[in-house]
Length: 110
Image (cartoon, rainbow, N blue to C red; front, side):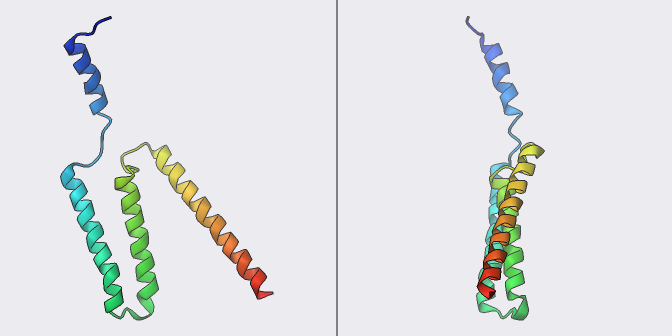
């Protein structure tokens, strides 16, 4: 059961097509974008955003989360079923947490 070099090469060639990730330059661009967004977050401490302080931080937090999940967790390049499962689990967890907080608040008010 010996395989020739050309057969082995063909087997490895098939596996290379599954990697749809970013190149090194792509990851550096994503990291720079995240650094800029983090700098904007830090600037909210020094610049008065008034009533927009919390909404700006929340929006930046959500944007950074989706960038990290999409690129560094490879959800952007994986099957859509994995992306769907991840986000459904996330929304379920947030919903359960929100329901818990609402119930806790309800019982404290009584």
